[in-house]
Amino acid sequence: MMVNGGGTGPMWIFGLRWFVGVVVLGQAFSGPSAHINGCDSGRGTGSGGGRGPTILEERRTRGELSTDAYRERLRALKEDGR
Image (tube, rainbow, N blue to C red; front, top):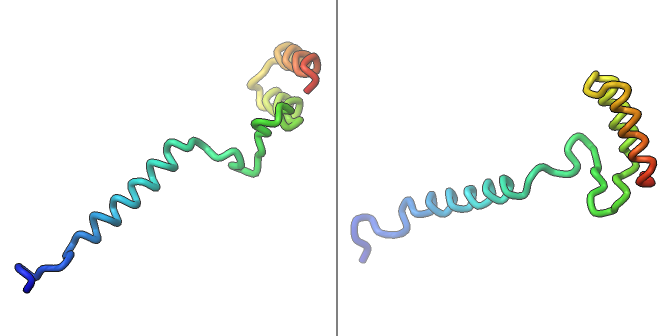
């Protein structure tokens, strides 16, 4: 015989909230995806994905880097063999 309507009642809500919380925390601690906006960062390959010069050019075009800073960083990339 069940007391007060018995059964699990609203306990399924607790389980659902717990599951959603675990998923949200997992996403929060996993960091941003390496494939956001279709950009493969090339992490772990040691090659930098070969995008170093392209990224520097984009930053120079947007005005984030001066021409001198662009040349200095491009030279450093070439010295590293990237």
